[in-house]
Amino acid sequence: MTARLVVLVSGSGTNLQALLDACDDPSYGARVVAVGADRDDIEGLARADRAGIPTFVKQVGQFTTREHWDRALADTVAGFEPDLVVLAGFMKLVGAEFLDRFGGRVVNTHPALSPAFPGMRGPADALAYGVKVTGCTLFVVDAGVDTGPIVAQQAVPVEDDDTVETLHERIKVAERRMLVDAVGRMARDGFTINDRKVRFGR
Image (cartoon, rainbow, N blue to C red; front, side, top):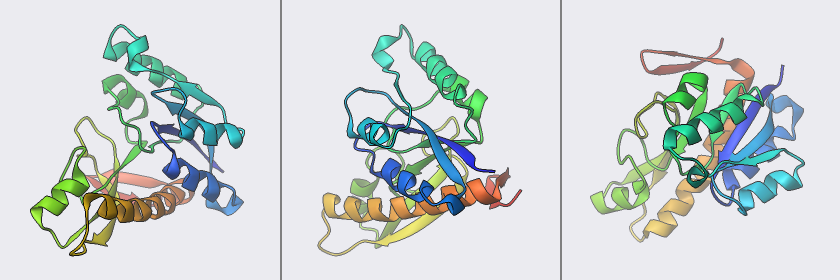
């Protein structure tokens, strides 16, 4: 059985593209059934359009409250009956109602080795701290910020001449590889979460 993925994006959609490319191979075990965004006219939506995949946009500003936005987003995503929701560079925090509906089936990436350097500035914080190794984390989303159970991690060495940009670029390359690999395994093998430990297999 092929797992159904709904992917949420906010920008250029390079992680989305990596997933679309992987899904071209039937043995990958998943297919993207819809792509959603929190803003119009972004390359991530254009990538989905070119691939013939349905898209939708839910902007926070279109709703009277953040809760209404969260509910509308959850309702729309639910209509595509996803097995897994992938936040691929989605720059909004999903809320309680969304997690009630899809809890344990929403994954996101973070450009650091969690629990180190949470939040928006992972690569910059790692560089400023002087760590020798940083990386990226794929986690199951919970109510916190980058705090959910860890699915996969990939280490990225910090070079002496790194800038935030060069470091982040190398992290993104590792992140795409990790995301494609782990989502494929989640789709094909299933997974369980027990005491924060994510295990592949049904």
